[in-house]
Length: 449
Image (cartoon, rainbow, N blue to C red; front, top):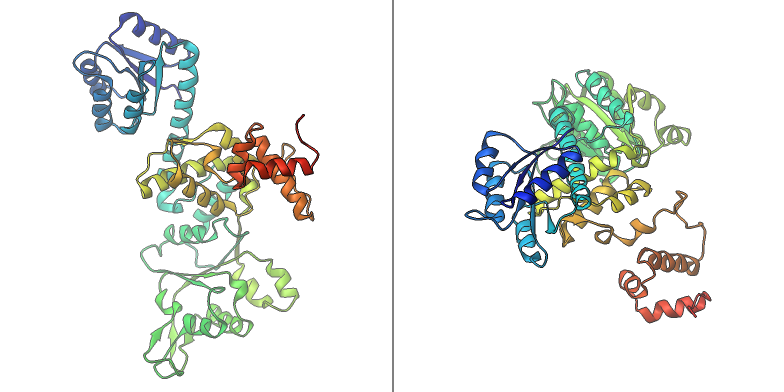
């Protein structure tokens, strides 16, 4: 996409220089010589980026920034100020400017900064378009990889069916989100979406939670209670981690799936229901069947429409989109204004194994957004494991099994490498003293001469 830039500077020579540099770099560009003229033009025509000097007559750059942001929050605003006036730039950034340039400005400085701005705008636009297209149907599932496109197609094709769905994948891949997306894309969207986590309840409570019970059915049954099947009538019931369902209940569940009726505990009255069942599992259910922990007939009854979610490290193409999505999400929740993640850190993201999948990525970004002191996230905002998580050959560098001493050596050396040989910074990152690092290096016969 070719981005449009509005240059605002009352110095004619500087104004012409900026316009020429931007046009040579491939940007559509217009210019004015005052903040007042900039506002008039901005109200007539949309600009993606505004590049404005700070010191101008009548209306300065910060005043212009406030007006521009009131008109269009999405416009990236860059302020230029003289060397030594960094406090002006800091003030502008707090008010919503994307970045600043210190004069005198060179073409290289402009090109470098503009490439960062447009990269940020590209990612935001891609995210926005994707969210607009998918928000109603797919409940904030983010992705553009081949694997995710196939999932979107599956959701659309199976949403309105009555058939049971089995969603598999390792923990953190988003199985519940896909289940919700199927429900809200279906003709059941106005009916309840009810969830039961089979792994979160003691075995003796799962039946009561599923089918409900009559008053007096057992000692603690003080009143009649409807179960999840009744609550989900007309809608969808998600049986999360179905592999953990007690074996004796699996036959009762099979009967409900086949006959669409059941009885509350302590009652002889049969209740008919219309419920769409979606089950999830992070286990290999065929191995559970072989070991006698899961009924084969129930497996085939549930697995009518199978959906498998691959790990995040197998769809790395989606990582930048997901990362920006979570930055924006936790900006909103915490009143922050983080603009994005720098390229060095994103390169680490692309190499990191993400054993915890999307959930791990989300948790790391939430923490980083909360603690960040600057408006661009860098590797310093993330745990040291991110930097040492992968070697250049794609391995972790940790040869398991290894001794604690070997692991300690690996961690210390990698941390020193990350901090470009600065042992004091490495010590701070590891939570130990510089003296401890020196002692350890002496043990490793790596003391500098």
